[in-house]
Amino acid sequence: MTDERPVLVATEADDLTADMVITELNRRSVPVARFNPDDIGADLTVSARFGGCPAPVAGQLRTPSRTVALSRVRSVYWRRPVWPSFDHLGPDDARFAAAQTRYGLGGTLYALNGPLWVNHPLRNAAADYKPAQLAVAQRLRLTVPPTLVTNDPDEARAFVGSHDQVIFKTLRWTPYQRDGVPVTGWAAPVTATEIDERVSLVPHLFQAAVDKVADLRVLVVGREVFAVRIESGMLDWRKDYSALSYRVVDLPDRVEKALLAYLDHYGLVSGSFDFAVGKGGDLWWLELNPNGQWGWLEESTGLAMSAAFAELLTQGVAP
Image 1 (spheres, rainbow, N blue to C red):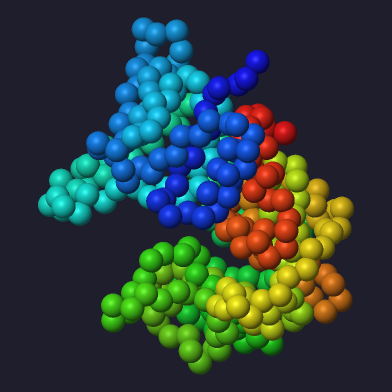
Image 2: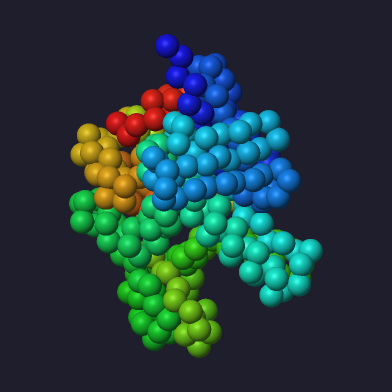
C-alpha cells in the first residue's frame, strides 16, 4: 500500500540544495509540500486545533498547490526558511506581526512530535552556540585547538601573545554591511597590537591557529557519514570556492563514533562538521553547523548526499 503522507520542506524560495532533495523524493513518489514562512498570507495559511479533538494537534497547512493535514505529516525538512519581516508595516506593527507568525506558525509546527525533523529548529538553535560546541567536542575526546572567548582586552592580548599565531572568528554569522556593501566575517589572523578597548564591548572568539595542510567537511545524515578533504591553501577556504579541490576520505572509526554521539547529544539527525587536517594527519575540531551547506560537495564528488536525506525523510523515523 502506498504511503501518501507528505514531507514538509520549509525553505527559502531559491534553495538549490532543497531542490536536490525534493528531486530525490519525487523519484521515490513521496508527496512533498514546500513552503516558506515568509509567504504567510494568501500563499500560506495554517489552521490548528488543540483540545476537544482526537489528535494533540489537528488542522492543516495550505500552500497554493497542496493542503496538508498536520496529523498526516511524515517528516519535516527544516532547511533555510525565511521568517517575514512585514516591512510594509510600521515598526511596532511589524514587530507584532513577526512575533505572532513565529510563535503561531512556528509554535504549531514545533508541536508536531510525530514526524521526523531534519532537524528540529529548536534543537538546531541549541546546537548553534560555539562555546557549548567546543565543550561537547572536548568531552567526546575530539582534539580542540586552544580557544578563548572573552571581552577582556588584557585576557585577549595575553592569549594572543602565548601562541605562535591566533585567529579571530565570529561567534555567530549575522548579515552585515559596511558603507552599504555586504561583508562577511572570515576567520582572520590577529595580533596583540590590534586588540584595543573595543574588545570589551562584546565577547570575541580567539583560537590558536592550526598548522594545517587541508580542511575536512563531514556531513552526517542519519547514520551515513560523508567525509570530504578540501585542499585550498587558504586559512578560510570559504573565501574562494573556485580555488578548491576535493577528495573523498574515510574517517577514523573513533572520530566517526564521536560525531554520531555529538549529534545524539543535541538530538539532531544531521549536521555538517568542520575539521583542520594537521601535517601528521591529525584532525582538529573546528565547529558544527547543524544546518550546513553540502549541495556543492555532492556536485563536486558524486557522493549521494541528497539521496541520503531523501531516504531519511521517506522513512520518517530516526535511525
